Picture 1 (cartoon, one colour):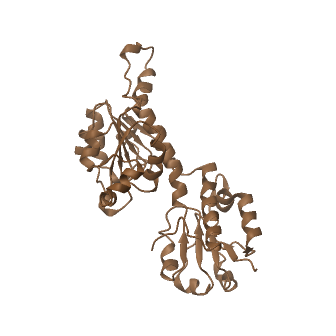
Picture 2: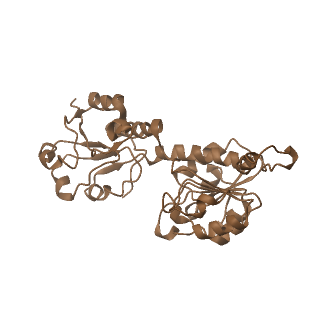
Picture 3: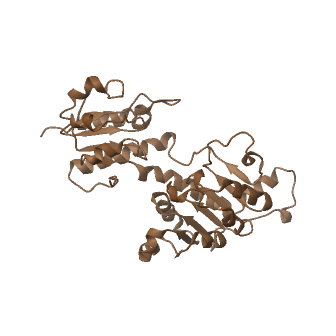
Length: 334
């Protein structure tokens, strides 16, 4: 039986960790692909694709990652045997449409990238339930009297609110299930199937207003759409419970940041944990740098370093499924 003909396609995007393909796939995974398939000897980039495109007529599958070149319909037509693109990354918006229009499957690793975000959020949620952020801040001011120090509600019976239920929230829900917590969520999609929400571990589906008013910790996981621009407003933040925490690993554009700043100035009991801002990083002079109850990270929740290669493992696993004629886990819906 002949091996499936494949090619690695990615521009020479360099990181401090080295070349992007080596960073994402590593030598072991590239070697695995080379052994299991008839791998084209040349890596295709935007610089050499014009010279190589006529040699790709029998290629059936592309392996890629960040740095995937944009191919137009004419180039794709020169690969009549191509059936699937396996992309070890998240969003495929910048390259996928011409492939999808030709009926070529696109598979990404967005589910793999959701795992570290969910783990990051779980850590922040548990620390927030203990009131650790405000407590740590006050500990740095000098010796304290234990009875005077603020302590959170704790991780037993409290209410956690999730805004949006996608890949990240679903994995986060699986991590929260063993804990004795009440989880409420905002999800118009699940509102049509409340049984699915219960199966995921959601106790109640509520509005954005209710999730802010009821939850001790609120975590934003909305998709980036025009409809969600500044959907989280000053009135929502003002309604937060005493000592509550807002976590944002979604997008900074979804937050009315002026309203958030105003509320945080008025409510020093609240905390905001912002892994995303708009813009990133905030400009010099932003109140986010001065407010003591704001804790920023530099968009680190997603896959980084060792976690990156999980995405390669996911798409290689889906490649094996595709080759065996089994259902794909992470097929992009056109």
